[in-house]
Image (cartoon, rainbow, N blue to C red):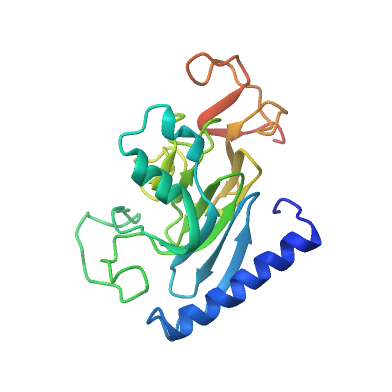
Length: 238
């Protein structure tokens, strides 16, 4: 479910991954954490450790957006292009479980900066064209990177170099779209499945990738059916 790469590109990815594995075990004080899986997008790569930590390298964000309207252009550029494996932080995010009352009951010892147990614990991730989608254990989705076609699913076309929670998806009764169990993505769109087997999509729809005819304009200045910057339920197969 990942973009196809040439044999040479795959060898390069493998070489970087092997060096990264060595540095993780010997130099980054994460002894005991092992690679769970790895992914590659069009121009960036990443891996997930068995403690829920995510690392990425390559062109991970929309560096071309720097000259358009960035708040911190130098920081944005630095975090959009990672020359070395870089840890993705989720510590600024909080999620609620279906039975949670909003309190913090303890702290989870993991590679995610020893954050409390209300923070996301990542179990899977996928990579598209300069953006990434991740799935947490509670069924929340997080995205970061390029967002020119609404592929981050947060109601905007503004890129983000750090994870943001996809709108309207969650494990509580306040969320119209319930917890997610599986995720996938193309170059500029995402497709996920809820725990009750409902398909949900967002992002580019120029080639009908979302499997749904959009009824209204999705984004300022965009033609109908161009893209959806919010999750939409795919019901054509029902």
